[in-house]
Each structure stands twice: as structure tokens, then as C-alpha cells.
Image (tube, rainbow over all chains, first blue to last red):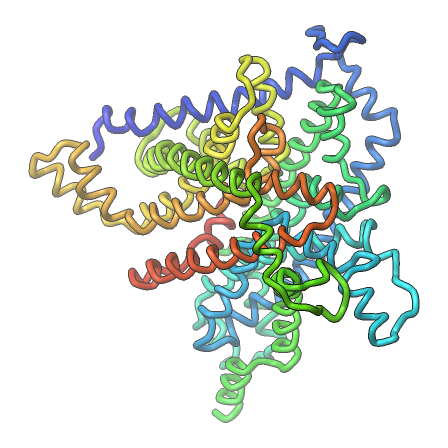
Length: 282
Length: 282
């Protein structure tokens, strides 16, 4: 029904834009990762694997990458722990207040990411709200200094930021479950637990996978929360990339780390897609 | 029969722990926001319990703060321009994905949607390399290009979801009756997609206003609001930040209410969650 001209008109402009501003930059990043930087600070366009060798041999890089993945895994776990039951509650037990509660989960997303991270800083700091509260009620005499500038602060803040992101896809997949399946399960004598584990949960797996991927990937690449709240022990891989592109001035090495992150992300997306296909019954 | 009705009863009410859990998650999500707003009126600055000497002083300081308002203006301009780019390329991209077949379509789809799930640092850095190679000076303009490119994904998902629900018969009739594709696009397709487009525009605008990871690498001399806030946070805790965040929060709430009204008037349920599933799984 749509003519060739129409199809060309809607296809070519976005195709060109995406090629210039997404594809070419990723390819450039790929190229950069094989180049090097001379002592005088210019980029040397000679192809070699030195950057990747450095990543593998210098422990600071892969250790930081592993730590970042560990932080991201914890964020994923906790936001799932908070997000899944909340989504389940809204979808099955919230009754007429469903839409209101849904909006209540969304609203925090509209408060600046940066500002929420900063709010946690004012809560967790030595002179922060939590410490002065504890001293006010005489629960502690001295401020607890392990709260801020630690991986704990980063995990807490990122969990706060990504819980709504995990909630959204889970809620969407729960909402798409035909209610007569759940009723049938009840009518056939299944207990609520059995209904949940045998009917509801398997059907919500696409949402779980999407939510988990979001939480993991987005916190893996975060560099602002660690800078603001992480302290030396909370440094993440993106902080190293930022410094390589800034003060340390080694773009090629930074590009190779970014490319590794990109590979991890695409690998995860691929993996979750495979899992989803395996689990989708429809 | 009684077993079935008690099953129904528990289905509506749900276990008590689930309600408690939902309350706890809401408390967790809103605690930093409440603290943020509360301490924007605190005479003693940020932190310290209990809050005391309630004051509007921080708001007074804020209103006389030139650089903050310059950055607000910059952010508004960037968000508006990015919204235009994202819509101008995102709407055709959605049409192309819905209606055209071309080689590389699957890759195109993945590329367009990738920035939605990719950590901002990768999008930002890859564009930084592009601008370096093309010798483009960093400025608000480069930020606009970055935001526009990254947020095409949002326009495309929203409009694509709208197209799935669109009845093509009207377009067909329009074409059969002799209207050109251009007329059909403006008189039939766009009006039918009005809600998706407005929803996408609002979402893109707010996401751009809050965006920091991409802007971080593409910034020239002029700051956007999040980068201005970032600069101040790095220098220390400043209560005007609470004040400006509170103001932005109130404006965001208004935007949510407007968006929600538009959505419910058309009896369309929010789709972004389902789109997140789609994005992560395809």
C-alpha cells in the first residue's frame, strides 16, 4: 500500500542520521582502541593490540572492571528484590488504586538523577541527616563514617535510581498475563504459592530479564554516583575511562575499555534475548 | 465453591507482607526526595537533624544566581532542539520499521534503540571522537546533536507503539480518494499518532533536561543545568541546589499530570514499560 517513494522518504533520512551519529562513532571507537598516543600527546594511527594487552596485564583495569560488575550485580539483585514484589502488588492486589500507585513509582524518575544521588550524599554524610539523627536520638555518640564514600553508598544510590527501571518492564509483563489463567489455576485447586511459581512467575520472565538487564548495564556504566559517593574504594570502570579521556590523556586506552564495556553490554542483550526466547510460551 | 471464593479474596487483598513491602519501597523511593525538599527550607543548610530555622533564604539566593539561570536557559534550548531532532528522525524511523523492508533493517532497529539501554558514557565518548575527527568545536550545539541522536530511540519506540495500534484503513481510504502521501501523512497519520508524538516529545524534553552522562563529554564553554549543578556539587554541598531541584520537581509533577491527563483522556494505558521489554529483548 505504501509506494516506493514513501518508503524511501521515511527510511533514508533516519538511516543516514543513524549511520553518521551512531554507526560511525562506534566504528571510530573501535579504530581508536587499536591506536596509541605519542609522548608529545598526538594520536598515532598505527594499528596494534597494545591497549588490549595493557588491559589484560595491568590488574588495576580488570580488577576495577570486576568490581564494577560486582557492584552492578548487587544493584541488579536489590532493585529486583524491591521492584518485583512491588510490581506484583500493583498488578494483582492494588485494586482501583493501581494507576495512582503506578504514577507514584514513576514520579521519582522525574527528579534529576544527579539530584537524587546528591540527596543520598546529604543523608549519608558525616554531618548528614542520618548521622545527626542517630546522635540526636542518642543511638550513637560518634558519626558513622563508613556510610558515605564506600561501595555501599554507590550500591544504595544506584538501587534507588534503577528500582523504577526494573519495576517498569516487570509490571508491564505482569499486566499482560491473562487473568483467566490465574483464575483457572485457583479454580483447579492450586495454592497462591503454586499459582505464583507455576503460572505468574514464568510468564513474567521477559520483564524480569529486561529489568535485570537495565539495572545491570546502566549501573555498570555509571561514573557520576561513584565520583559523588564512592570514595577511593568505590571507583568504577567508567571513572577510569573518564580520567583516560581527561587528565591522563590516553584516548586509545580509554576507547579500548569502552569497547570492552560495549561488548559486555551487547553480549548481555544477546544472552537475555536468547533466554527470553527460551522462556516465552506464546 | 468456598475454596474458590476465599482464593478470590486473597487475590484481591494479598498477603500483609506484600503491602508492607510496597510501603517500604515507596518510603525508600521518596525518602531522598522528601529530604531534598525539606532541607531546601532549612536555615542551617543541608544536613543536621532536626531541621531548624525554616527559611526561604536559599530560594532568594537562587533567584539572584545568574549562572544557574543561564544554565537553565541553555538546558531549555538544548532540550527543545534535541526534541526536534529526535522527532524529525524518530517518527520516520518508526514508520520505516513499521512499513518498509530494506537490507539491514534488523541492524538499523538495533542501532536506533541501542542508546536507550547503553550507558551514556559510551554514546558520549563515541560522539566526542567523531567531533574530534571531524574537527567540530564542542558547544551547546554538539550537546544538541548528542541528545537528539540518543533520544531518537525514545521517539521511535513511542511512535512505533502508536503505529501498532493504528488502523491503516483510514490511510488507505485517504490514498484511494486521491490524496498524496504528504497530505495523508499530515492529515491522517500525524493526527492519529498525536498522543504518541506528544508523549514522546514530553519524555524527550524531560530526559534531555536531566541528561548528564552524554553532555559531560560534549560540553563546550556553556553549561547545561545538570552540569552546572555537577560543578557546584564537586565544590561542596550547596543548599541552592535543593531549592532549584525542588522547583524542577514541581514543574516535572505538572508535566506528569498533563501527560497523564492526555493519556487517560484517550484511554491509552502507559506503554513505556512494555517498550522497555521490547527494547531489551530485541
